[in-house]
Length: 111
Length: 122
Image (tube, rainbow over the protein chains, first blue to last red):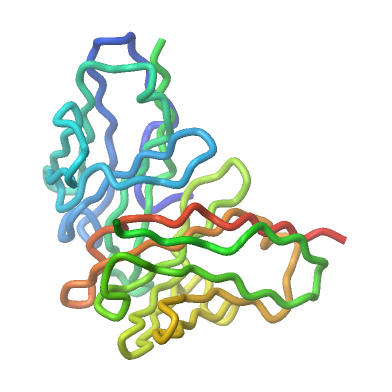
């Protein structure tokens, strides 16, 4: 059971928009920055979003991040078949067992 | 280009020891943290721990404390993850990733190494 809760799967058609949610608590998302990672099949994760809503250089603006309270959201517009991947949210948890925590991951299918 | 290159896949027997590596290049290796993340077959990401090669300050996830040892040799820009006695349940892909910590909090992981697959089987 992951500390951060993500939907197991989402799907949408090419060209459409999709959002992926990440729910936590005051000890993690509520008081720390959220990052999002994309893991294409058979490859290592790649940073998509950091500090809730910032994109590293090279990440297209089709990808966006937001945070409100104890939840965060990844948005992807203009879906492409190449976006099919697993997406993970991550943040720091400041509870007694402090450390980096990840969501369970969301499988995006582009129909 | 900032890059982390990990050592190759390993096949080990239960009870054996193992040390895998992660070599950084394209940046000041002693100025960033290196984290280790486990991904068991078909499962999600789990943070194991992190080391600052500049002074070898090391933090472990409570789930992995005492189970693995993280170290670094700054003279060759390489971080390590080691086990003294492997179990079948250690079978997984292991990733290293560069990180920054601000006020004791990991900010993000970027970039990631390509991963090292560890298979433990009798």
